[in-house]
Length: 377
Ligand code: NAD
Ligand code: IPM
Ligand code: MN
Image (cartoon, rainbow, N blue to C red):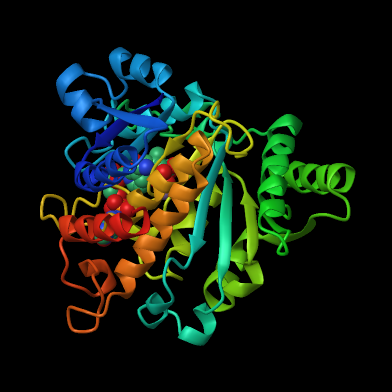
């Protein structure tokens, strides 16, 4: 029996609530196979780690992540830790950088057709949307030199700065990964590259290197077009099918556009992500970090009403990309779809409040497990 070690980083706010459900799913998948065993261990990370150890990414947590085959994260941060000197979010950036997880894959696909009626977009606008945001994750504004403003010394200008830096290799490798992903998605092998080339030097580099990489390495296989980020943000909610395929962009634009993309299926709580250091070819040596795209949702934390689906689908991505378990990942997607479509609770399906339902986090988890039991019998 092969053993897969997964470190679970529940984090803060609704993080522990949603990772609990995804962990149950992974444990269930493990129990169904005699070929492999999935071992889960939990580690402090984020705000809870600041409380217990003084830093958001303690040495013991990092060591456990290094020894593991994959990482499953809830979310970190919250009003308790504010925007002070030591912040939970620093731990997340440190973790992404440490493992060079340069590609953040955020699919905004419809897990269920019946969600169409819940999307804030008109059904005829949202229908048939199928985009995967590929966000560069370890460069750009998040990681350039930063100067905090000094607002307390009399006479100080109080100037702050954040430097955006990209080089050719950064853009090449994320383009290759996006192209490989586009090819897996045939016949929609299409990349929409998003930038701000009319203003930023980094974006002019981005546009040229994306174009050349596709031209030199994927000619005739992958099509690419370029779009400025401001109008792309508008198109994403007015005519989202125009962006079907891969939406390829830099770190900060990708952060913003991926949250926006969750409007199409109808809730931030639905979308999963994978952060990878290489091509997602289903090889078991690809250590990834898997997390929902949402945050700690302080406004609903502790109530047991968070939507666990983004985290459950992140676990499915973990199985597919880090362990090559595509059949199990497909089963999880299918189970989620069935649960969202289940015609109970007044026709709303088994949904949490963000999707207009009344179900608790644990009830959605239970229902997914029940469907999986049928699918993997
Ligand atoms: P958020 O994503 O936490 O919440 C935005 C809105 O979406 C809230 O109304 C929330 O209730 C709702 N929401 C989010 N996830 C949900 C779910 N699973 N089910 C139901 N509703 C859900 O964004 P925010 O409020 O801007 O940020 C709160 C904290 O989370 C901040 O400290 C931020 O830094 C952190 N954050 C962490 C991560 C991460 O760890 N990867 C990601 C984003 C934000
Ligand atoms: C995300 C989050 C993070 C980001 C924060 C918490 C650092 O918003 O994962 O989308 O901006 O990358
Ligand atoms: Mn974000």
